[in-house]
Image (cartoon, rainbow, N blue to C red; front, side):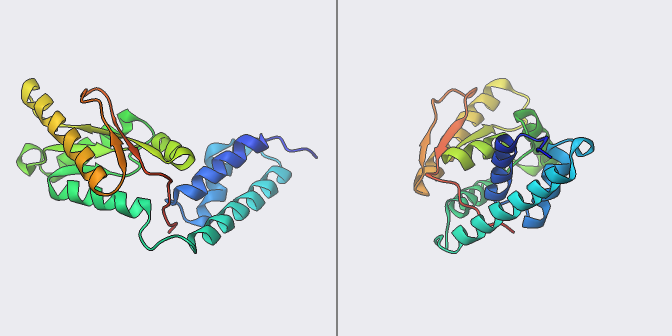
Length: 199
């Protein structure tokens, strides 16, 4: 029996899940069969194909990891994020699936930290679709803002300062980084490639 799924599209999705480095190998198969595809429409042949393709992608990723340097691009990016956090800027990896999701995640952390009393002065994040782009191209788009300040002028000035600091830290970490200076546009980081070890 022929496959009912789209092999090219599904293979690309499996590759993205394996190579982004955020998911245990054992989770990728069910993420495809139960979340990405409609489990009620899958045949036994579809499921066997997904199982084999997920195993192949994960094995290829593990083999590649063996030759990676001790500190990868992701490790350097996380060091940038850690520095931002030390400066009272919320910095989140893979924050939801969209900009709106990412801002929701930031607001949740801000509330949990104590809102204005926390001293948090901004945020920086990328979401799952940005991650997909980074895995494919090595380029990562970072959203940011100058915090939950009621005064518009102060918030906008803060946002400019946060954007400049993100660019400064990315460049210090050895990445290319571009930002127009427009607070409605994101920072583009050129990581070269995306390498994050899987859990």
